[in-house]
Image (cartoon, rainbow, N blue to C red):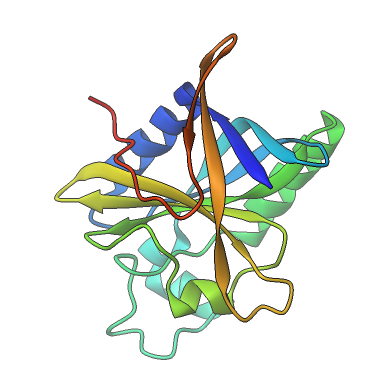
Amino acid sequence: MTVKLHTGNLEAIHRHAEAEYPAECCGILLGETSSETKRVTEVVPLANLRHDPDRGQALLPLDDPGRETERNRFLIDPREQLRAEKDARARRLTVLGYYHSHPDHPARPSEYDREHAWPWYSYLIVSVEAGRARNTRSWVLADDRSSFEPEALELEEGPGAAETVAAGQAKNLSRT
């Protein structure tokens, strides 16, 4: 499946990732699906609950809280998740997936990401190097949950114009 994303939404994700650096940012991708595409029409930036270690640990304990922090983990508030899902349904939109950043790491899923992901959903990961959004890639978890597969990402510049990022191809999609 191909993820279609307007450049304005990608820029919003990049701004969020840069603003949260050196911590991970996170958010939800809303839109519509067809048999071959997931078209993102909105991005919903959310707070990373790992900024509040006590609250984050109470909701989803980390194995090593001294090593695992907001710099390499994110946690979405379940109430915010539910609010976004209800709002999307009311407007006939679908939760297509999630985005988050990897500060000073590549835009590829970690083992932790795999353990906490669900099949079908798209996972956009932004590599942020020294405070600047660099590479953005989309991934989907295999149905057997064994691994992530690269997902094609098509950037829509405007009516009738698009730029395609082939599945598995790292590309610099940062703002200039």
